[in-house]
Length: 364
Ligand code: ZN
Image 1 (cartoon, rainbow, N blue to C red):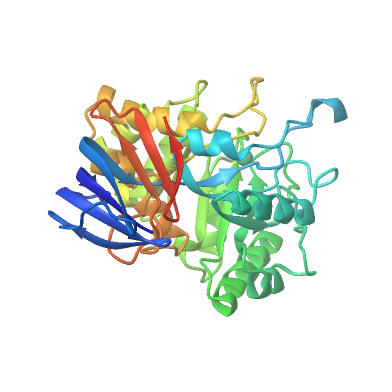
Image 2: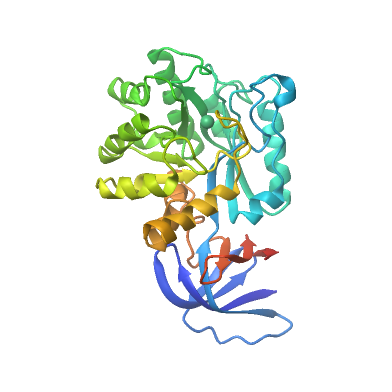
């Protein structure tokens, strides 16, 4: 059955104007101003006039098994459900382990990623966790990246945090090098996703790794960079110097994402290197649990409160993430041949429909 979505104002995330979108199986078959197919036993037509279409969001930092457990074993946070993810407009995610790689492990992370995939989402995982040396599935991060399809990087490895392993520079560079080699061997992004804590060294461990190795800057994805003002100031300079910056949505202690994005833009940092992720189902240092819905809320607030144009705001959670994870152009864009991961909203940016790999998963 073909699906024809009529009359959408399309953001790919670049604005490409009014189009019809034809879905065949899992993919976008055609995007044209007028596709003249009629409703039939082979074609289902959806009238989407007056609505907007965006690529499904990609969240590169989700504690799908639940994080936390930092106030003893009863404080472990629950797993995420597929419904929470879909309701947030997320169609692709990367699951990861955090501080707790003791009561949780990569085997169950992989199993959970498979379970979410069976519910229609596209899922990946990172090898490793906060700790160094990293936990792995096969005995090495190179082998994990080479042989496990779902593994596309390593993380979240903690630095500048009392919960980190306080590994030495040589050990960190070795881990980054293995991640890089694993990426090359496995044909993956091979990113090192780094949790930066509130510790006094901030981004310094990342700068030192770059200074003392020949590793490419693109491999390093430091996250939570809006968690406090000092760290954010370092992040602005780092971004201007060509580094990637991942912000965490739902931030209330440091800088909220809309503030952080508009400051990065004002400072002349390249927003194409900036991404946003949710840290969903992880524990928040001040208490509480990260929610995946904050990702959508913060992107919309960038548009409505900070006058950031929709294509720039949505790039932070679609194309920029897909490029970083080397999923582009299969993911993170609306174009012919891409996966049909499509978010449809009203003019008020309220979700109305969500397609994952060509399947209508939600009508709101
Ligand atoms: Zn973290």
